[in-house]
Length: 154
Length: 428
Image (cartoon, each protein chain N blue to C red):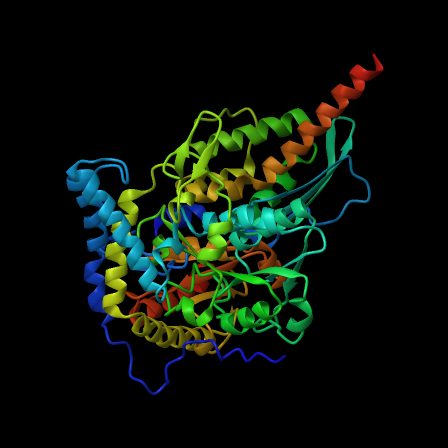
């Protein structure tokens, strides 16, 4: 089979697809969002429990293709213990990586490096980004709410 | 009232020999079919999305811009005259193609979606109120769903759907109750783009007419694939797209009964659609131009004429016969794969060649990406029928959809591809 295809469906990605992490529902969470890819019908639900500024636990449930499920699973794995600022940074790094841009080595992307092969399949980039945009939208919304409530108490 | 699903379906005797044309020979007329995709022969099975174009259509587009380019209905010079007469000749050909409509009843739009929207916005807004009812079905494309949802919200008219059963047929047992005395319009697909189901349009139209309702038929999938005679089925509106029947993109057709179109207000205003304009008032042009404001897709309409000639040469009955045979073959081959589930009717008599299926392990998107590396083009997703896809209990399906140039070889390659995919993703 073709080389780009092997690069897309790396073993590590398929392993995440078959055994996705973060599938345990959380009793308590501070961030929650549902996302979907209107073009193809993929659906995702994400909840995050925080301890201070850091991610204590995460629940990711994704109904979709191998790329979107694996990307969500990798997200669940990598953001545990990270601060929300770091989470945003990682999301930006992945976006850059999928655009084929150079990325800093500041944070070790671990298994997420396996998503690099997606960039040769432009129509599949949105699959890889679904979990990340869904989470980041919720993080931004939370920060916006905090800002408003902070200014309203001034 | 009992409606038999078979009654409206054009189903030639099964004993009749195959199509009167040779699909593999037609492939030579389509330049794109000799293209290699990822090093492989292109096996194009995404015809429900759009069909490929024969050389005669491509040449007609080219010829218009090279030799005839002028705006229509305005100029007094040779080019304008030629362009106008070619443009209007296509209208006559379209009217004839659907069984002898009047030329005033053929409106050119951008696509079938715009044609349906025109009816919902113009006829719908002016004829519906609270207490009225719109009837549609659970198997509609978003194009024949969203306009009615919006219209229902705007006017307060109720919207009810004819449900479907497990085999992808409309459940017509309660049709008497659903199409009630307060029903004003029924919006129905003649052939589902996802299930392939051919609906008994004529029977439903007859019932609706008895109740005083009018019927819009979404013919985007039926008109390209089977004979559709507007006089026989007696639809009040029929919408379809040129690009799904060998024509260029950007050209849609709305057929409407003259008395309805005459009463309808235009939804787009500007040049071409007027007869007399003052600084404070305007009068509308006659049919069909009242609904064709602005410069239309002249090249597209003219080239669509070549597409209609091509289809007429083959014969729509022969096309239906070929697709029935190939659909049967595809369904049979797919049924031999124990990891595949097919949606929609299992008998080609009741359906067209848009065949949706899933592999029990491989997601449709991954399947489509994999097949593409073998040169096989299928669609994956919800096929612009999200509520229906949900109803089937899946988030997406893969869809292979057939047309005149597809052969058993194409299907064999698809089947081989599905098997290869299982090896590649290590399910065998």
